[in-house]
Structure formats: structure tokens, C-alpha cells
Image 1 (cartoon, rainbow, N blue to C red):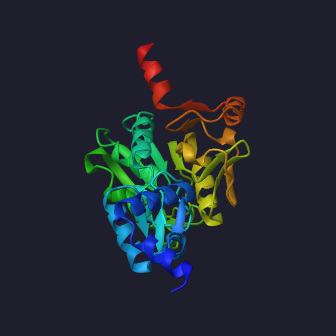
Image 2 (cartoon, rainbow, N blue to C red):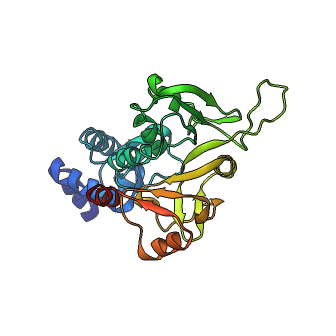
Length: 280
């Protein structure tokens, strides 16, 4: 046995608790990793890594994915499915959902794009009444309370299975062969993949087209994004900052982005700002 083999055996025999703590820290630092990468990094078998990841996932310390894991605190990588993304930064999304729901008056017409943060908004509409909601999400109809609805529409288009949503430019026809109809909404609630001084962006071009169309059909726009989205620019630009009336988020943006939002006349809504408004 070589010295390297002996060292590898010693590392394999380390207490599992110690290895799993190091593994969890490594995933947190690197945001997204593969099983093969972890097996090589910690000099253990792939089966050992899989067992460790399964246990850490059960403990809520990371999120198990096909072939690897992601950090619970990371911004969701664009190639991850809806089930994985719903578990990432879940507490922050619920906070944002509660804040954004306050912008929706009873009786409003609301367009909502697909996304895990907008699903949180839908859940917090349970005490509303007489809403008309139009969405491209195939999941949202099951998340919003029936008692909140007057009518619910789902936009047509090709289906992206990874997001469980239709995509492409908004098309709303009364019949399959009928003409496009001009729709107007009181509020658009739009979840985006990134927010930078350059504007709002997402990873998919067709999704960006639908989001932009939704924004253009609404009197007011609330962009919902957790703070992990700040300072990034993804492939497809959705709109400039000024296209939104509100940015609803869990924490104050960095100074450069805050200045850009202020210049674009976008109101930033956070738990702190909401608390301050209630005290005043």
C-alpha cells in the first residue's frame, strides 16, 4: 500500500460527523457541487458521499439534487427544477410573498409570472377576495386559495417542464383560432433571476419575453426578488429598473443598486421598511 493509499484509508475512517460537517461547509462555500467532485475532495467512495448528502438533506443543511447538491442559501442555479428551487431561501421567499400580497387590493386584476417567489405571493393571497389572476404558471392555480378568486386564467404557449410553466410572448385568445386580445391588469407581480443597475434579467430568452409582455400590460409592476439576486446579470434582459413600481425583497440592496433604483423611481419594500411604515 502506498503512502497515498494509507492516507486515503485514514480519511475514509474519519468520524462521519466530522466529515459531514466539512462536506456541508464545502457545499455552502461552493454553492453547487457534484457527487464525483465531493468524492474526490474528501477521498471517500461515491456511495459514502451519497449517503452523507441524503442525511444532510434530511437535516436541512443542503439540498440534494440529481448528481450532487446545492446550498440552501444560494441563489437557485438556472438548471435546477422547481422542486429544488422551492426549497432554496424558502424563509426569505415567504417574507417577500407576504409583503407583495399587501400591494394587491380586493377585486384587482393581477398578472403573475411563474417562479418560486411568486408562488409564495400566491399563497399569501388567501385572505383576499374577488381577484382575477392571469399567469403562465401551471403550479400557481393549486397554490392560490379558491376563496380569493373571481377568475383564473393560464396563458398559452410551449411548456418548460423544468419550471412547470408556459413560455414565450403572452398570447390570450378567447378561442384557438381567435384574434389576440388586449388585456389590462391593475398589477403585475414578476419574479426575476437577477437585479442589477442595468435592469432585471433572467436566464431564458422566451421567459424574458413573457415577463416583459406581462409588465407592459399592467398599470403597476412589483418585481419580487430575494437578496441573493442582487448585483447579477443573466443572459436575457427583461426590462430596465424603471419598468417596475416596486422592488419587494428581504433585505436592502447594496448602495450602488439602491441609488440606481432611487434614480429610476422604484420603491424598495423590505421587512424593515414595512415595519417603519407601521410605526409611523
